[in-house]
Image: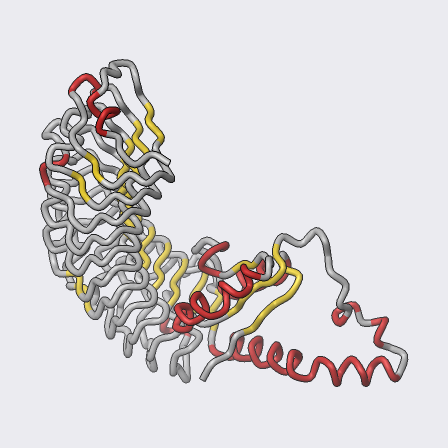
Length: 390
């Protein structure tokens, strides 16, 4: 494996456009020679990079894509890029970054920025001047709040993913200039209120704030979101939704399972809805889990009783034949709050035994209703493993 690329960086490569150095043992990135300014794509993921020296990519004025994911980078000097940078796609996921404030001062053309799986605690001034930014991933970091005006310069944003942080609040005017965002995800955080923050997202179609601590929804919470089609608020502490959805005239799917809601009124929705929304409440999810758990618990007794009466073979739902055409050996169904435990205790053992598996977060994209996802997962797996905790 390659450990030192000093000679390569200083080489004369005037016609080179793509460099792929993934999965090596490179530890340090020094400055590229000015003769390499035509490089457009640089892949450095899955190395052991801990240090990128100031000015490292300054000469690469034509660089469009840079992948630094899966390294050990904890700090990036703002001068690693030149003032004339053309960078559009930057992947810094799975590193050890704690702050990115000022890092992107010279990369104003970035369109796609992946900062997921780091240790970032604040983004107050991180994205200033990124006027071309369209897609931003901040999932699995350590954010606790998103202040007002954080995204004032990012007027072309389309997608924001802040899943799995520690976010407790979002400023009421945080998204006031983001009229083009269509997809906003903030599930598995510690939000106690939406604080009216979603209203300015005039073009939003998909909103996911499941598994937070949200206790209430304001009247007219989505009054300006006329294009909103899917809302997931499952696994919160919501007890009342009176008048919350009156502005969501395009609503098609609404997830409210795992809350404390006793009643939903017709008046909580707009009078002129374009379609009848499909609402997932506790009853659907609880019934599915209860029936699954009962079947798994009494499976042997049920089969013995049916077999003794000669009717077992007629029930295809209980046949243990393995379907060789299924994609996975097992589908694991579990709460997102148990995800860390499952990934630490269960999945490694399944992999060790050579079984293939699928999970919601790994194999299924957002934008679909939970019961549809469960149905698809069960259909493409030979077995279903239902994990229930206290």
